[in-house]
Amino acid sequence: MTDLNTFWAARINWFNSDGREQSIKDYIDLANQLIWKRQASFLAAAILAAFYFNPLSIFAFYGIVALTEMLDLLLGRQSKAWNGQDPVVGQQILKRIAINTAVSAIAISVFIVNIALQQTSPGHFTPLFFLFSASVFAAMYNSQMKGILLLRLLIYAFAFLYIAFLDVVRYLPPISSDIWLEFFTIFFVLYFTGDISVKFYLSHKQRLAQMKMINEENERTKAALEVKSRFLATVSHELRTPLTSIIGSLELIKNDRLGVLPETLKPVFSIATRNGHRLATLIDDLLDLQQIEAGAMVFHFEPINANDLVQEAVESIAGYASKLGIQVMSDPCIEDCQINGDRNRLIQVMSNLLSNALKFSDEGGAVKVRVETQGARIRILVHDEGSGIPEGAKDCVFGKFSQVDSSDIRKVGGTGLGLNIAKQIVERHNAIIDYVSEPGVGSTFYIEFDRQTGGDDPSAKIKPLATAA
Image 1: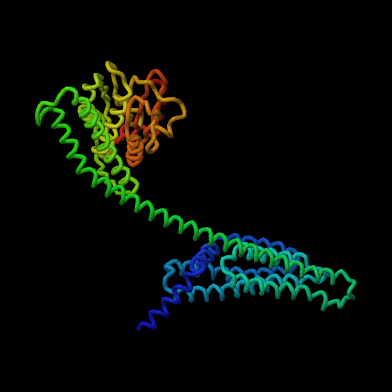
Image 2: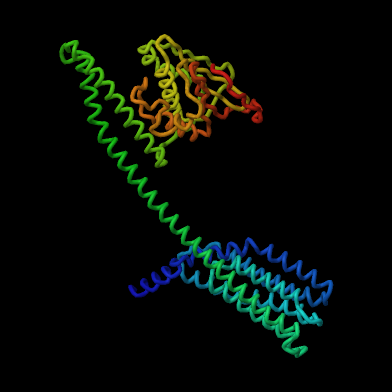
C-alpha cells in the first residue's frame, strides 16, 4: 500500500512540477478561445482557393479540418471537471491533446497540399503562405507545451518539404532554375519558423517562472501579514487590561477618591490620565485596523434612520464638546432618510468625525451636523470652523498613522488611524467619505449613502458640495 501511495505521489509531483498542470490548462483554455479565429482563417483560405481550383475538393478537405478542430472544443468541455490533482486524468487529457494535435495538423497539411497539387504552374506561393501562417499560429499559441508544439511543427515541416519537392519532381529542373531557388528558400522558412517557436516557448517559460515567483512572494506576504495581525492582536489585548487598571487608578487619585491630592501634583496626574486615554485609543484603533485588514470585522446591516444616527452621535459627544466649550448643532432632514448599515460601526465613524471637528475648533465655536437628501443619496455633513486643510492633503488625511500637521508642536494629538478606519468602514457600506475645506474658514466632512426608498429617481444627480455648511 505504501508503494502504491508513493507511486501516485510521484505522478502528482510530475504533473505539478515545472508548470505541467498549468501548461495543460492554459493550452486547453487558449485552444477553445481561438477555435473560431482559426476556423475563420481556414475558411477564408478555402474560399480564396475555391475561386481558382476545384471548389468541391477544396471545401471537402476544409470540412475535414473543421471537424478536427471540433475535437479541441469537445476536449475542453470534458476537461473542465479536472482539478489538476488526479495524474491519471491528467495523462488521459495529455494523450487526447497529442492525438488531437496530430489529427488536426495532418488535416491542415492535407488541405494545403491538396491546393498545391491542383496548382500546375511552377511556384506554390499561396499554399506555402497558408502553411507558413499555420506554423506561425502554432508557434504563437501552442508554446505552453513543448512536445505538442514540436509534434505539430514536424507534421507541417513534412508538408513544407512535400510541396517543395513537387516542382522538382515534376520538372526535374537544372540547379540554376528558379525552382531550386524556391526549394532552398523553403529551408530558410523552416529555420525561421523553428526560431520563433523557440522564442515563444522560452517566453512562455519565463512567464510561468515570473508567475511562480509572484505567487511565492504573495504567499510570503500573506504569511507576514498574518504574523503581524496576530502580533498586533496579542500585544493589544495584553496591553489593554493593565492599561485599564492604570487609567482607573489615575482617575481615582486625580479625583481625590483615595485622599486629597496636593494641588502641585494634580497637573501631573491629569497629564498622565490624558496620555493613558490616548494610549487606550491607540490600542482600540490598532485592534480595529487589524480586524479590517484580516477581514474579521463583522458588520450587522439593518435599516437606519440617518437623523436618529446623527442624534445618537451628537448626544454621545455632548460631554466632550461641553468640556471644550464648543456647541454642537444638528440639522435633521425633513424627508425620509433611511440608509442600510451597521449602527455601531457608523456611530464609530460619526464619533470620529465629530471628535476631529471638535479638536480642530476653537473654544466658543460651533460644530454643525446636517442630514440632507440628494435624489437617490443621503448625505451626512460635519462642519467645523477650524483652520481648514491645505490642498493636496487627502492622502495624508485618510492615510494610516498620518496627520495633516505632523510637527512636534501640533495643536491636537491623535493616533493617525481614526479617519483611515472610518474610510474603510464607510467603504464596506458601499458609501463615500470625503471632505471640502478652505484654509482659515473650516472643513466639512461628509458621508454619502444609497437611500433606502423607492420613491426617488435613482438617476438623480448628486449636487457638488461647493461651500461649507
